[in-house]
Amino acid sequence: MPSPGSNPETIPGKFHFLCENYTEELTFTLVPEGVRNRGGTNEQFCGAVKYDQSIQDLEGNGLHVENGMYLWLNDLYNHPADNESIMTDIGYPELSSGDGVDGPNYVPAYSISRSGTIPHGSTILLLGKDSEEKKGKPEFPEGIAAWQPDFLSISTSMGLAGTITDSPINLDKPAPAWVNDSSLAERDPTGNKTYTQRILAHELYPYSVRPDLRLRDAIKDQNIKSYVLIELTTREQGGPEGGILNIPFVKRFTPVTEMNFRMWIETVIEDGKEILQLQYEQIQFFEFQFGTDGGTTRWPHIEINTLRKKESSE
Image 1 (cartoon, rainbow, N blue to C red):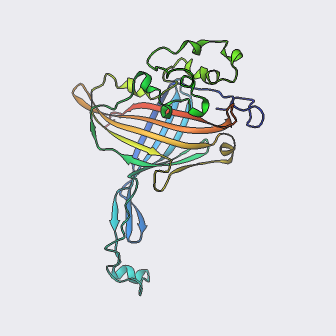
Image 2 (cartoon, rainbow, N blue to C red):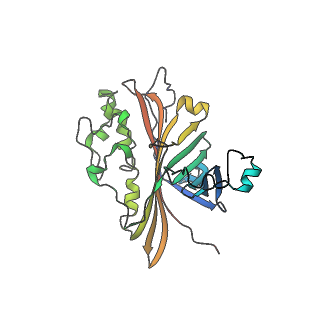
Image 3 (cartoon, one colour):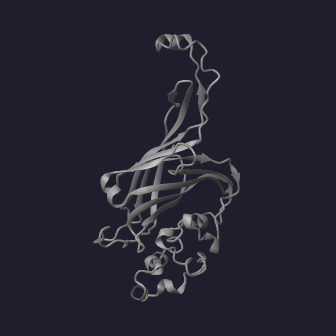
């Protein structure tokens, strides 16, 4: 987040870094029946599931509230003209009964979407696909291989200290010595290492640098029978695209420009029982102020969690 007292005109590039553990409750509610989208010859029935997300810090203080919907987009229907529709909709003389039975037929580029609203003043729409059920547990990288820019809380526009002048940092070993060098700010006030030092020096390292390693470590000793992966993004993927809308204040100072989301729905075997588990990672990019080179800086904002389905109270 932008540091207090800073502004994009005179004192840019200063940031406040926040990383903390939290608790979360995620509630899903099925919308009865399919939601019909009429498109003439093509019709779609969206399967809709509402979600409500509530996140608190470890002291119970509210951190995040969000509500929205997941939609299943693959249920398509061909609806040709018939005598009743022609009469009701005044389709004659252009339409005859049976017109449209042979297409053209719409083939959706995506099978799943997610829309959501948060009280900061941003609204999201992500699109993507699910995978076939896979056996075993999801795979996450280890060591140096975990230093992948797309999943770090340090973006390439922030300098990626640790890869410019050094070998990539092994995130499964203690942080390099320069991370705890208190004289670095005086010796190199605008350098990449000074810029990102506090992220690597955080008490939650390495999760402060790559949060999804917490997902990896959470399932390391679990017996996971299978999982389904859902991947969604606001980026254009060769078809209709999602996006993010921000209120004027957010758009002016900290616009949210992109969001990528991965969710694993896992079947865990414990004490001979199958237990549903949900893991997710969502990465949003804020763009505020600019870096020492004058270019736009993209600041990753990352949330991850491992959740279990609650036992029925009945």
